[in-house]
Image (cartoon, rainbow, N blue to C red; front, side):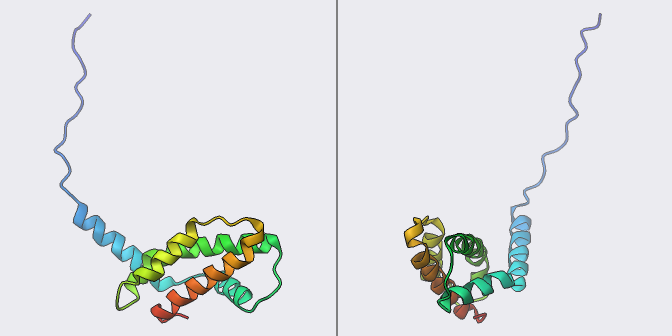
Length: 126
């Protein structure tokens, strides 16, 4: 029997790529900003802001759409505004984390719709 052991191939460490990765992330974020929000988010905004009667199921779906839109807006808004919209992003982040009970769902989606609309206005997309 042989006492030889297998040696793992060694390779030099990869060079730091952080600047390149940041450049790629920024390019993807700008691309996402240019794509904008889906039409279903705009439809939901109109439904909520036009004070239509909405069922609890519709309110839950709208809340989910708005949370998804908020995640996107938090990353894309800084690329489409002349200043960093700190207050608007903080408001969206707080609403994203909120989970209202069914009795507060209508008020919640209305507040969320107003916050999204305010940020879209700053972005020139509202």
